[in-house]
Image (cartoon, rainbow, N blue to C red; front, side, top):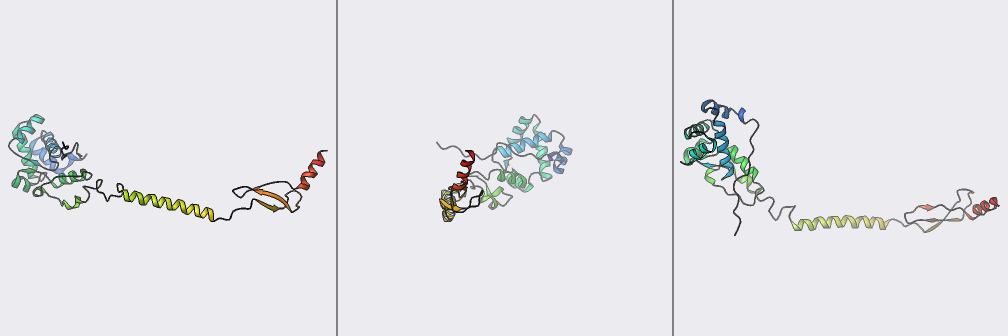
Length: 219
């Protein structure tokens, strides 16, 4: 059996300036301090279920009131004030009995851009959903650079070509002769032989005359 597609969020951002928002302050002034947990409960229900809206039916005032321990009248009063100050969109509330806003929808669709499928009802949209159409499948899109096998092959070929280039450059360098004739650094006689190692460094050797002279001095 296929796993059900998740729609809502596990958590949502709450701005640190939430209580300083003039809309919130107007609601608190009109409905009292109990309006704060009511608003947070409403937002939690929005983001947890459909993600960007809440259907305001006859059961919802009781459910919110029961959740935060206030009266249904306090919940209804808070919602009506929230609509009045444009915390929730007035047109959506009056036309569809839906609680939503531009900010709520933006936060939701920003949060689900990595999902493969996100459902939405065009009637309730206050934002341009086309802005998010290309980003919803960003991590599952087969043309994505990070997941595209063809892209990985290209990266491998580029890396391989760089290695081959370095090899060609190394092989094109003139190879040092295994032996070469140099002057003795002690007596300045020429014609003696010094070996050269694989990396081109001379292995210093004394010429036969200097070596013979040193042996004679030791006698």
